[in-house]
Length: 392
Ligand SMILES: Cc1ncc(COP(=O)(O)O)c(C=O)c1O
Image 1: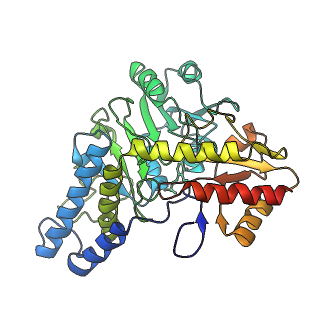
Image 2: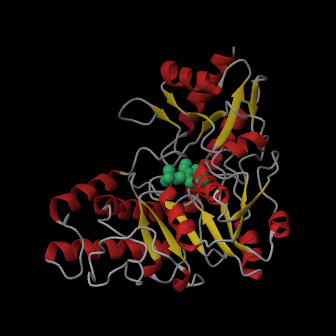
């Protein structure tokens, strides 16, 4: 049970909870002392805020295997980072390849651009059994006009980890930009942009990085030519105010307006915590909890798990699993778990309608359970027991 409010929180794929106590402490401390608007040429408090931001840029750049802190842009969340990526680099006539596993944060901006006749779009499928895409299908979809391949690192419905390095290699060999949406992996799955051949990496701060909501970012590898980028939102940069339009300097080209300094201060403490606890160990912990769940409900005949199930079902997964129980809609089941058992899960389509269509669970969706860093085997056992009671 996840402490304070007697809730067994199993909705970490939406946002992680609880956060390490260090996060709230860092935010309170920053608010009390340095919470001025950052600016290199400003007073001492403004300089202190700017220094903190640069420290976190460095920390996160190194965390994803990057080399240039100026290529790390802060954003409001992963959705924002993805929009910045698409809208700053895609040009009229470009072809983009994506997948049926994507979250609406990838699907919708790309679909809008396609509907407007600005880009053309190909969505490759995935296997409902393994829950992964086939890199060869991505390769086959490449045309002379293909400018970008945009995929999620792990499905937010099935939890399955995608073959990012293989897709990245194909993209690099074809001179195509590779954008990786790490919403479900950063902080839980070790990530290195060099190994995965990633050109653009979008991430949230508030999921497995354990930071506050309102944080996220985009890292642009040195393989992305800055001359190809258009400003996404224009405004104040806290630095050179003389130019008529957004300065061409990174990170200011893609960052306008006052940043979420308080959130970023919390994100620094969160990332430190994540590094200290080793993402590889967190992944093993989450996989053990998912496997415990799958094993524990195997005797409920009416319960159907989506994607891999059986003894090694969690081997290629983050801490996420979806299921339905015959005779209950996902919304009903989620409501019963919440109201009668104080267990927080997420019913519905999980912003991934294409994935649910492939899984035959559209339009109602499924119930998603997503244990995180702070969940225990007892949390999973409470859920298993509740599902046995409900199914009986
Ligand atoms: C795969 C995936 N991409 C993008 C997002 C959007 O992230 P955010 O909520 O930080 O905007 C999510 C959120 O759940 C997600 O699961």
